[in-house]
Image 1 (cartoon, helix red, strand yellow):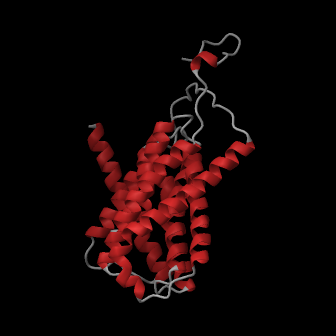
Image 2 (cartoon, rainbow, N blue to C red; image 1 turned 30 degrees about the horizontal axis):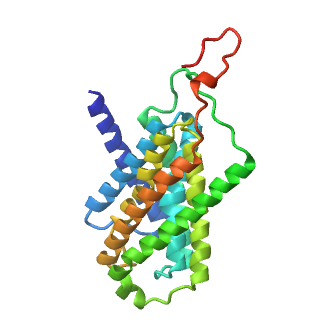
Image 3 (spheres, rainbow, N blue to C red; image 1 turned 180 degrees about the vertical axis):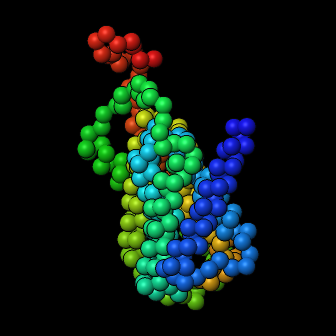
Length: 282
């Protein structure tokens, strides 16, 4: 029964997401889904599964969890996808990108709290004792944030070189931005990934494995699989699918590493001093 209930909630959430995308897409861009609904439905299912994984691994509840999912969903699935489309001039005007961004924002800001409610994570049981976390200095945080950003740029370059033979013909007909412009954009996109990673990692309470799995699976789905399942007029299918594999693999590696880098470890149980009159934390 629990499996049936969860399946029902996932399916209902995916249909809700599809409806919101259709509504706000119509309002902001005037576009409708094509006659083939399989890819949009499958894309929504993947998005819901990715966000549900993060929600189930987090100790956050209510609005705090909704905010985490919003940052993750809008930041990775919309903001970090459309800014690159603008950079590479994929026949999208700044006005069109703004409208697509607004559509994604409206969808995400409504959908994420509803998803938390549907999945049953709005209110949790009485908060259990949680191990305190090993403190970090501001300098330590700064190093990890910079490292996370550099790591993203490295993964981007390696993945780009790997996919280049499959998409070279398509980009030969496009005026490419300068290497410095690409580097600046990827540094910015890396910081957005790090910001989303910090939001997710903050709810893991020292559970590095959970954080690595959550980011390692949600990043490739939200950035590559879900958006590139959809047919679009900006790139042919062979380019779209090649980028899907490229982003999926590189973000799987990057997300897992970022989760490990950003999540603070819990203090070992034998080093925790219980409060006076309290039972030792085990």
